[in-house]
Length: 324
Image (tube, rainbow, N blue to C red; front, side, top):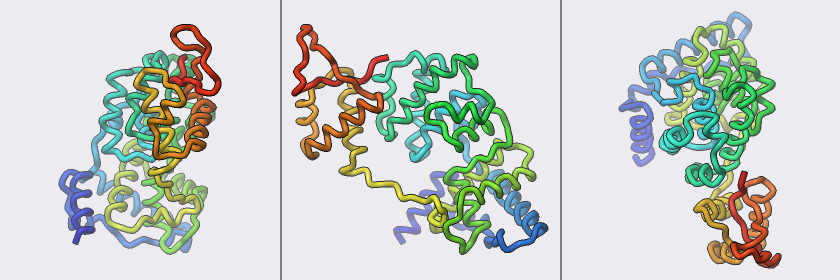
C-alpha cells in the first residue's frame, strides 16, 4: 500500500494530477526491435513515436527552460539537471537567472557567489565548469556555437549536453541520449536484453528522427514519457551496459568536500585547524585529502598571508574560495 501511495502521489506531482489508472493507459507491450526485419523496425518506431507524442500532448510538463532558445538558459538547466531532481533544480535555476541573466554576467561572477547559490545541488564541479564556459562564450558574441565539435571542447560539456544545446537552442536533429530517453528505448524496444550499449540506442534515436518534425518537442516528449515509466515500472536503465548506481553521499568524500565549500563560501578565509574542528565526524587524513583535491580542482586556494601581513604557518595554512 505504501508503494502504491508513493507512486500515486509522485505521478500527481510530476504530471498535474495524473492518476495511476490514467497513466497505465499509456503503457503498451514492448517489442523486440532486434528481432524485427527492416519493415517491422520502421513500424515499431512509428508506433513508439505516436505513443510518446500522444502522452506528451495530453500530459507534457512545462518548465521555464523549455520556453527559451537562449544558450545560457538552456545549458544552465542541462548542467543543473545532471544527477539532480527537477524539483530541486527549479528554484535554483530561477535564482541563478535572476543573479546572472546572461553569459556575460556569469563570466563576471565571483566563485564565492556561485558556490554559495549552488548549495543544495551537489557536484559543485558543474558550477565551476559553467563559469569557465561563460568566459569562453565571449568569442562567439556571448552565446554557444551551433557546432558539436566546438561544444565538446568546452569545460564540462559531453556528448549528451552538446546534443542538448544543438537540439533545444538550434533545433538541430542531434542524437540526445540521457537517462529518461535511455529508459524509454530500453523498455519499449529491448525487452529481455541486458548490457545494451549506448551506441545501439543512438542508432535507434537516429532512425526515430526520421519521424520527427519538431526536435525540441520530440525530446521533451521522450523525457516526459521516461519519467512516466520511472514511476510505473522497474528501472529499465539497469539493463544498460553503462548503468552505474550512484554512490552514497553520507560519509563520502563528496560530503566532506561539500561541507568545506559550504564553510568557505560564506566569504571568510578559514585556517585548516578550524576546518578540522568544523568536521569532527571525519578522519583528519580524509579532510586533508579533500582539501588538497579542492585546491587541485581550482575551487579553493591557500592564503599566503594573514590580514596583518604576517606569513601563514605551513603547519596551519589558511584557505579561501579561489579568486579570479
